[in-house]
Length: 275
Image (cartoon, rainbow, N blue to C red; front, side):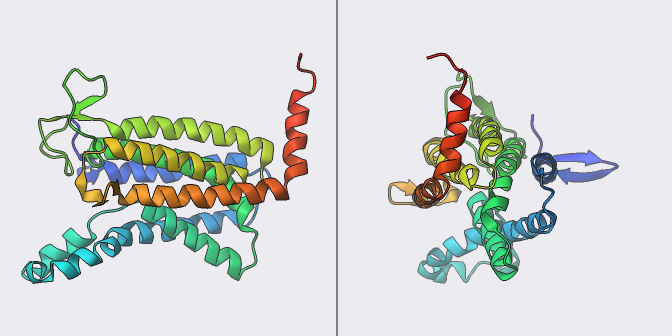
C-alpha cells in the first residue's frame, strides 16, 4: 500500500507535495556544493525559477486544453463551476514547470544583464535530481503511472484505491521509478560534465538532449491518457522533439564558442594514458 497522504503532527500531508519539497531542498544543496564561485545572483534566480516553474506547471495543462474546451463547450458549460475549476486546473505538468522556470530565468537575466548560460549550466544537475525525487513522489501518489503489465513483471506495481488516477488492483508498470532512476543517473553524468566544463553551457545542453530522449521513450510506456494524446504522440513527446532540436542547436553553438576549452580539457584527460 502506498497512500497519497501521510500524517505529521496530526496533519495529513500529500506525499507528492512532500517529495516536491524534498526535491527543491536537494536541488539547492547540490547547487551550493557545485557553485564554487558563490555567485550572488544564484539564490535569487533559484527562487525566481521555482516561482516561474510552479506557474508554468499549473497553467500548462489548462492552456493545452483550450481547444478541447472550445470544441466541447456545450457539454463543459453544464459542469458546475466548483467542479470545473479543480478539473481544469488540478494538475501540474513537469514540462510546463520547465518552460515556466526557464522563461522566468530568461526574463530576470535579460533585464538585469546577468549571464544566463553559466547559471543554467549550474542548475542542470540539480534539476535532474529534483525531478527524480519528484517522480518518486509520483510513485507514492499513484500518478504518471505506466501501462498494464503482467503481475510477474519485475517493475509491476498495484496501486490502492486512494491513488491519484491509477486504477486500483491492476498491475501497472512503475514508470515513475524507472524515470527516477534514469534521472539520478543523468544527474551523475551532468555533475561530471559540469566539473569539467562549468560555465560553458554544455551541462544544460546535454540535459536537454538526454532528458528529451528519455522522456520521448518512456512516454510509450505510460498508461495515463490524461497527459494528452494528439495523433500518434503525446503532448510531452512533441515537446521532447522541440527540446531535443533546441538543445542540438545550442550544442553546435557551444562547441564553436568554447572549442579551445572543451578540446583542451579532453587533451588534458588523455595525458598520461597508455595508447
